[in-house]
Amino acid sequence: MNWYILAVIPVFGLLVFVHELGHFLAAKWAGIRVEEFGLGFPPNVVSMRKRDRGGWEVMWFGRSREIDISNTQNPFTGTSGGASSASEAPQHTIYSLNLLPIGGFVRMPGENGDAYNDNGQYDAGSFAAKSAGKRIIVLVAGVFMNFVLAMVLFSVAYTMGQPGGYVNKPVLGDVVPGSPAAAAGLHKGDTIVSVNGQAVQTFDDLRNVVNKFVSAHKSAGSTVPVHLEVRHDNSTQDVPIVVNARTNASPDEGALGVSPKTILVSYPLWQAPFRGIQETFSTLHAFLVVIGQMITGQTAIQLSGPVGVAKVTGDYAQMTTYAGWFPILSLTAFLSINIAIFNILPFPALDGGRVVLVLIEVLRGGKRLKPEREGMINFIGFALLLLLMVVVTVNDVLHWGS
Image (tube, rainbow, N blue to C red):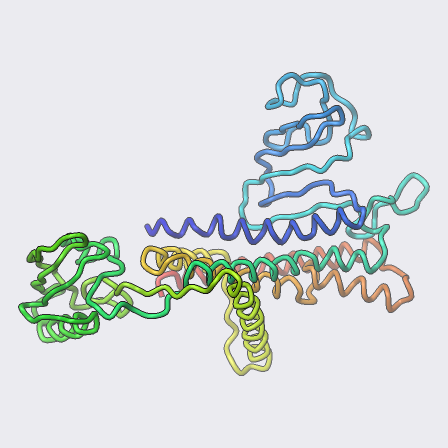
């Protein structure tokens, strides 16, 4: 198993957190009561909420979420000190961590226009009570934050260094785990002096000599011994090493399973943000061009779900061993822009679809859709998105190794 695939957890967690943080901060600015800020989807693992009498209440596995126990002596149980009714529940936001790490949410009263007080009017602290302008700002805040995150990540990536080429020497930048080179004892930073007695001056020389030798001996079996003279990193002596090169290796890994040492090109701290902003808008433009081509049928529709994203993230995370942090940072920025564009699409249940409903309300002179109708539209949209995710995930699993 490629354990680098686990990098998808912090990557996706960051993207979701920043997106939902945008909604959360905008809601607080608009005076909307946020009932819950959750990472992941239920079932709930642990939640925290401020107490009316000070301190924090910790709630495990969804317990005591509707009551406030201000006098509890054990903050990890939430059971002592008496209970109050649901009507007396505090107005503080619940911050929750949930089991399914595939998303997040900011729960506000009146999101479907259905939060009324005892007088039949909108609850003053609900989403529905706010003006159309404030509601639109809250809805697009998550998308805005994803674009900001992309700019920041691209800026950091360019500050830390972008792979700008290879060292013009036969120096190993990475040795793939489990490869013939790794089995023979080669390591990152080793210099290859000769191959089968033939001196090599550059990594291209190394690649060409090995490929020519392997091609000439393919009939010998799945592997063929290649004799190398190697100078290990921080050593002045050359040592002989025999590597059983693969005769049927993929172009990505090569017969030995090694890659050249890369040169990182970094930008000054004052210049990197400009480069990051430029890269964000260039990526956005490229996205829009591809979407337009898919809509017009100029290119095939290409979708990837959580499984596909996890595989790509694992591959890019593994590249950090020889190419620095640029690959994974730039990929995370790319995914952040992807999430922003996806969420702003005018489709029910997405942020863009809900913005459309608010704009329809404005065009109707402030007349709102019935809460039941708005809720049904969003429910159907969510169901279709869930179905699409299942289909895409199955496709990703079937094409995992391709």
